Every structure is written in structure tokens, then in C-alpha cells.
Image (cartoon, rainbow, N blue to C red; front, side, top):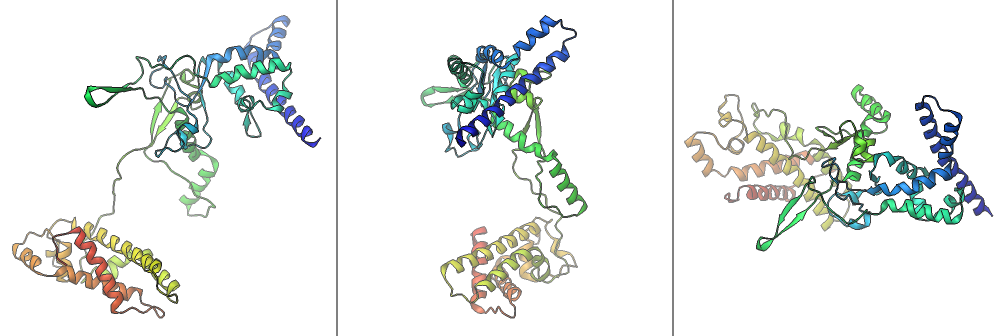
Length: 428
């Protein structure tokens, strides 16, 4: 009995939603009409009664097609086929696609004058659209409709046809086509379609930057205040426009976006570092210059070593320690490469006090034949690794952590291996 009561309540709610939709459209039409006599107004009101409206629109739904990929984005006059691709068609895809969206918003193409039918089918109650209810022959929806069971069956069948492709698949001379070469001089002729459902998902995500929560979070950051959550920014967006002054002629979702679509930048990363200064006035780069660039990594390694110092050494601990030290070494190699990009010969500056090994390392292109010969015959690489190992031991040392020759040798070997990989001609 309780279940029947719930279904009846749901049916009543659905009926109210549908009738409100039709009432709003009727009122809009009446406002646009200048003056109507009683007979004309009465006829118009009858058209917007639920049963009469469904009778009429169920016969016009064939003018619309539900799609995820549409052809008119390539050319508004293209008359080829648009397609509907369900998630099941490509659910194991490696690349981002329409199948990556958990709940895609479907698009609809066809006669723009019939788009009110699609808006009606997209009405929701309890997160389920009228179209979804028709496709599943929903009991509550059937109860809400004022017609015979036979007519309801016909309505459901006709409205469900919005998902079906009209006619056989075809392209158009105005659509893009790609010749994909095959062996023996043959080829495939590919006809790419615009992924309107995926584009709409991207558009929806990007538009979040304009909502009130995002504005508040952005303001808090600008003013240096606390905010319970962050926000996303999408720099360097390109904006496309489809349909001009009539975006509804392309598709329903295009109309909702006012013809706009976003393109995220697909470019290789551009490294913009602050100006690198030569390490003048320092005997070594490790205690001050490099230590300041690795403070977070050093603290992470130190905290890990403190956490496991009373544990028996095992492969997992040794592997984690090696990974953390490797990250510090990666940062060292990055920093050294930045200094090596400075104009050659900067070590001739009277203010340069670097020890010889580090000068050889960090100014490799210095135009001085005697200096270069000395660099090639000096074992400066081994000295660099030794200095790094001593510095890391001293930096990690605390009242509770002690390091000796074994750890120093491990740090040294890790850096030697990286230097040997970068410059295989070096015999370490």
C-alpha cells in the first residue's frame, strides 16, 4: 500500500511538472499575441492541454534526433547524418572521449521549431528525465498521463524514436572528410563529427569559474584570507562561435551555450623560470643556494628517516629512501643545468669564489683552452659527488639521526649514476 502511495505521489508531481511547462509556454504565446478573440484564445488554450499537446508533438518528434556527435558544427548547411554514441560503445577507451563522461548531456538536432519537444522530454523529477521514463515504460509517468493505455503506448513509442537515426548513415559534400592511406594505394574515407556532448561538458566545467563560490574563493586568495576550498582557472582559452545569430540552427546545446565553445590550449609546456643568477661570492652551491631550493624535499626525507629509524631495514624502506634522495638529485641536476645555461665564462668574474670542481661543473663552455684542458684532466665529477654526499649527511643529521660513511657512499653513488647517465663519456 505504501509503495502504491509513493507511485501516486510521484505521478502527481510529474503531472504538475508537465502542466507547468505547458502553462509557461502558453503564457509566453499569449503575451506575444496582440489581441485574440475569445474563440481563438480558447482554441490556443486547448492546444496546450496535456493530452492535445502530446498528441500533436508525438507526431512531430520525428523532426528531431538525439545525438552526441553532430554534423552541422562543420557547416550549418550540411545535411549528413549526426550520431548518438552511448557510453557502452567505447567504455574502455584509453583517450578522453564522450565515453569518459559519467552522465553526458545529450544534444538534439533537427527542426529548430520543434525543439520545445526536446525541452519537454528533458524535464526531470528525482533526477530522471521524462524521456528516460518513457524508455523504461515508467509506471508513475503512465499514471500521470490523461489518456488510454493504448494512446500512452503510442506516445512512448513515438517519443522514444528521437534516439533513432533517421535513414541510413551518410556524409555531405559540405562536411569534413579525411583520406586515411592504406597499403596498395587504397584508403579509408573518414568523416569526423563534432563531439557536442563532450564539448558541452567542457563548457559546463569552465563556466564554474563564474559562479559565486569561485568568485568568493578568488577574492579570498587575492586578499590573503582563508577560504574552505580552492578554485580552478583555465588560462589561454580559445573561444569558438557556431551559428552566428541563430545558434539554435546548429543544435539545442549550441543554443544553450549561445553558440560558444571552448578550446583548451594543446601546447608543449613553456618553462618560465625566474632569472638565474651566477653563484658569485660562494665557495660551494650546496649549503645556501641549493639548500634553499630543496627545503621541502629535505624535510620530507628527514621526516621519513625519523619515522623508520626504529624499524628493521627492509627493501621497501630502502626503496623509498632511494626515491626521495633521487628527487633531491633531480633538483640538483635541474639547478646545475640552469646555471650552465648562463653565458660561458661567468666564472672569470672576480667575485666568483667557487671551488675548482664546481667551477668546472657549472661553467662547462668557458672559452679558455688551458682551463678546458685542466677540466678534462681533473676528476672534478668525483669531487662533486663527494661534496654532495657530505652536504646531505650534514643536512640530515639531528640529535636523533646519525649518518656515517655507509650513507655517504650511498648518496655519492646515486649522484654518480645520474652524472654518468647524463654524460656517458665520463668514467666515474
